[in-house]
Length: 514
Image 1 (cartoon, rainbow, N blue to C red):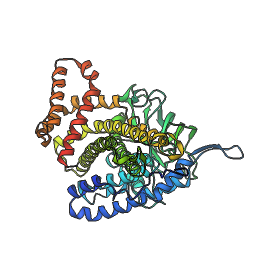
Image 2 (image 1 turned 90 degrees about the vertical axis):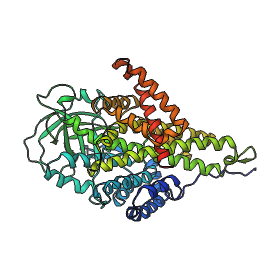
Image 3 (image 1 turned 45 degrees about the vertical axis):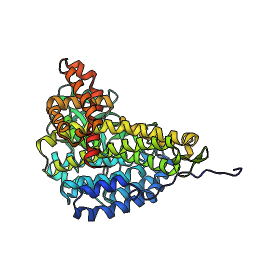
Image 4 (image 1 turned 180 degrees about the horizontal axis):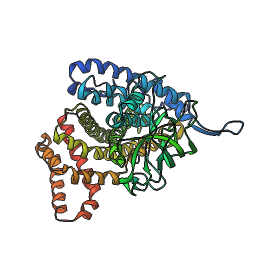
């Protein structure tokens, strides 16, 4: 024991190691889709443990830097990223992480295929999955609302499998006045009268406090046209291109890169729009409605990335438990350690089932195969899914870091990053409280609560005592709230949302036999 050195955890093909993913896909995908998807996923699972993982390590070791001036004092605001980050972008294009959803070769199953790719790619992407989420969201918004000539200009790039022509997109809404509450947006939009390659209609002036994917080619943002009313109703959605023909920033000045708790490889900047040309998407005043299509996709991405993060953490813990000895035997042979892992694995499977269920609903909606009740479920469950998987990801990350003892607290093992990066899932695209209130809006505007009650009342899980007990408690809470006012519903919104997450994830775990 004098010269003992502990062997650390290692990664192998993440598709072949994932029984939950394989079981689910083989049960839900038609044979012809399996024939295409499964070999591709096996290939990507191997890359996730080899070259992608190596590039992610490089991207984390060499985070982006902001170079405001060239050697002669000219303002350039260059954001320089590592070769690893650039290679992860190329791989995302090659593997069709965004494009697969829009080929729609497999109908409603196209989204399941795509989200399975994302699920394997994300844990080895150094969070390049973030720009991909916004790219996908932008593609959907443009597909739905942009004029034909703008679609023809942007969509082939956003959906390209060729790294040389692939574009990513940013989503710039956060200002000093707030993040989720965009009503105080102070960016102004005045008429733009010069010629523009993409048909700019307005010039934007304002400060964006937090812009992820600031090295992207395009961005969608909210701004207030001249004369528009205050609050959310006065906001419009705009498309902008970051650089002009000479590759100069389009009247954009970058103040600084954000020094964040985690996601260190992801360039996130604070910047000013100083007359940036932009094109309005949709009618004036429709900004919040139009950005909702982006948020639906980015929130589902957040959930898929969260379960990918959980799976990576648990894979490392499982591997280590077969290598580390304590008190005379391997960790995996200690009943308490085994039980702790079992509970975490069950939480993961519940989140997995719910995430892919909602992804399938999204796929159905996009090809026109969704029923009225399923559309309401998609609306109500998207915020619940995001908040629920985020909380579970943080808990699993914390437990896994703890399982490594002191090694889990030492930066050069890479393990603390699980916890630091895991925290972003509950913050990006809406906090737990914000999303809980969004669920209440779905209850009010879409009458989603009766649809959920009908679903839970008739699901197979009603035969399981543990589910029936939770269902009874949920009904009791609803009974109390129905006698109260709006403040009572808001006060208990978080409890309600987490309860919906518990019930839905457990019912789907049983339905999918995971």
